[in-house]
Image 1 (tube, rainbow, N blue to C red):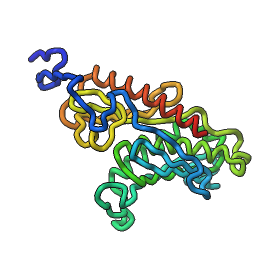
Image 2: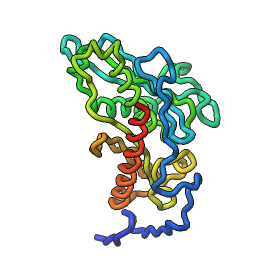
Image 3: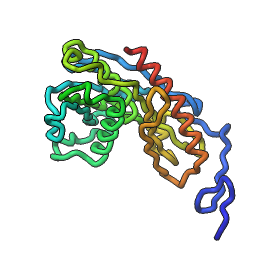
Image 4: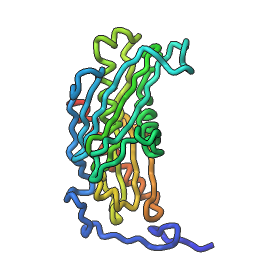
Length: 258
């Protein structure tokens, strides 16, 4: 069996990197987030409304409470949280067609909204909700990378606002959320582990990893893909460390918005 040297990929090819020579397109340091901000009360009618900003990425997140549950929960006394995700036609450099015009959602859209729903359900006490469903809608107004992580982070804030709204909170047995949820992207850009990829980096990334955590640092979900070549376990460990630091910043921004 061929032995692979430490620091090589599975094809036996050594990967060397000079981090001092790598410059991010934005000029940020490897461990630097874009500016993260949440504007609450962005729209009037939903139970919770937040405009999430990760740099130039903008996602409108709204949470609506419905006095109904999916058929598999009827009569159980338990509630549900689900999410829907969409990208507006003018969100990217070239106009994309509305998915409604084609009569079906793309596989990417379905995958992202399932991720958002799973992430948010990780902090929900369904018995406290009673037989209510909270739908979190995440609409991308402007995309510059990291739309799913901005949607999760803004979606949690919209969910929290909806659960705190007096008109609905009195219908719940108790406050139904336990803890915070936030997400960031990390990746390998020209051999360097970087935090919070924008589009310029994401389009060239050698590895793209999305990380969802709670306020205690517990991992809710990790989505990681090698785009150019297999990445190493130690590289993943460093990316997860970057993600943990970035998520702390997002959690702080959520708390400030509340």
